Image 1 (cartoon, rainbow, N blue to C red):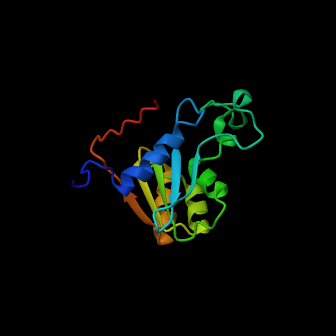
Image 2 (cartoon, helix red, strand yellow; image 1 turned 135 degrees about the vertical axis):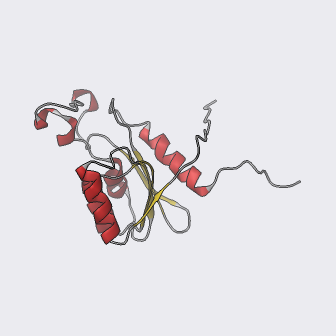
Image 3 (cartoon, one colour; image 1 turned 45 degrees about the vertical axis):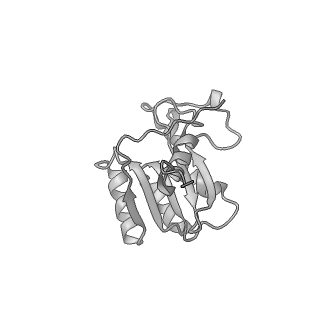
Length: 160
């Protein structure tokens, strides 16, 4: 018997983990997931955008606009940073799969942690200053950027 032919690629697998992690986010407008992977294709860490430990999601502010202190931007930890902080081992030399292109703050954390490649799906904010700065930071630091395109591929996960 020959092996199955319809299995998913490593990129699909790890981006799938990132996308599944994003489903944990309580943010009503933007859910982002990240998955950090070693050269041996082992998951090192995962993360999603959410409140820091100790802050209750139900009491958190999830507003996008208004006074800075009354918006989510003052409090939410992004998926990439959460994945870096959640890791129990060094992420030096790893790659990170993320559903949304990193902002400039996450780019700094990615470079500082030694991650060598960012693989992402969406770059919907590519014209925003934070994305332009992020791309500049990552490129100048020698971090490889790869935008993945799975051509509307759907992976069904049935929990039964």
